[in-house]
Image 1 (cartoon, one colour):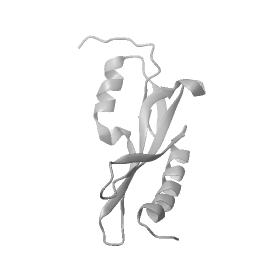
Image 2: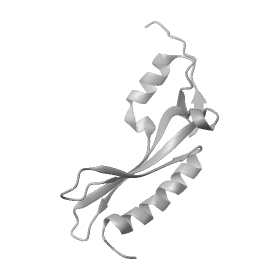
Image 3: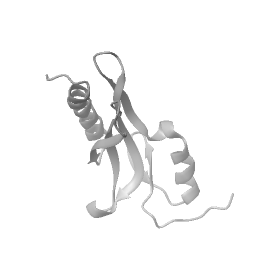
Image 4: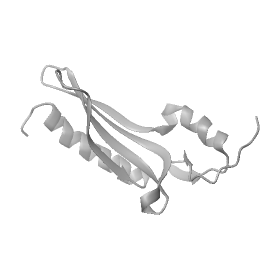
Length: 120
């Protein structure tokens, strides 16, 4: 395989830390394996046990151009409630692994309460 050098700000995780890569195939090979990117994922169920949403935090492997080319982790909440189109109802970025985990857990607590229909 021919090595194609890139100037794009592409990153992989090594020991939970973003490391910028020089070669496009290195990033693509890493990115292709979803278990490399997925930090945490969790379904949200209603009182009947039906899945009404999904919370996912991933390492994107990309840089946030508007924030000084920092690589980022992204938490998204998907609303699957019956009779609705699946929506991304929440999106948040963090710039380090520990903060991404903390934010994911906050999002889980908040959105499980909201998407399950519970008041508190």
